[in-house]
Amino acid sequence: MVTKMDTGKKGKIVTLCSNKGGTGKSTLSMNIAAALANKGYPTLIIDADSQCNTTANMYGREKPEYSLYDIFRHQHEGDIIVHPGQIIYPTNTRNLDILPNQQATALAESKHYQAVPRSYLRLGNILRDFVTENYQYIIVDTPPNLGFFIASTVLMSDAVIIPIEAGSQFALDGLYNLIAYLQKLAERNPNLEMIKIAINQADRRTNASQAIIDILMRQYGPENGNFVLETVIPQSTAIEQAQMFRTTVLKHASTTPAAKAFRQLADEVRKELES
Image (cartoon, rainbow, N blue to C red; front, top):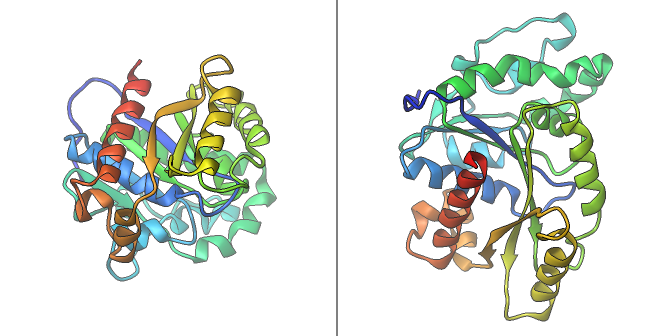
């Protein structure tokens, strides 16, 4: 396990969430985590998405002995069958560990609703103290919906980032309601102080991308809640290639504009958390 730097402060948990797929959420999660780790910060990435894309890319081995699934599978009995330290593994990036997932987690989701709202707090009760004491930054990838796992991760987080795909005509659909939902969860989580939008897959040469960026700045910029992060992640073949090779852009193509943008975004998030 990565050893946390002695800063005297607890680590920060950042959840990336969206109410739809195809926003680049997993890619953002992995590259933000890798960028922070490359800066020397002990970092953990948690895969809370049962599609397991982050696990496949960052764990990269056979099915782990323990995973996020083991935190929940005996929830109805009230048992905790593993210690958080048992479900954390190293990645091939220095200073970066992963808490992996498996697809079976999705099958157990219906059981979690039997104990709502208490079950929403289970993940945070088990993980928050341990991970914030052992890592400087914890990045959480989540499913593309507003179900149980989104609520569970947001309720243990210090910050939430919403990826918006700048090239999609559907990018803004449901964004207002998503922010309102997150603000409602923040009423139950005193640690959650930051909700931000990250503009992703932008091609400023197209009218569609520029129009979405302009709308976001007008509706959610400094004069309307200041939700939008300044760094824009460009559309890039390097991102597609990194996905094909199951790695991060920072490792696959570290000198590209996309890699530079991910590093800038990680720095911006870090500074926002420290301000």
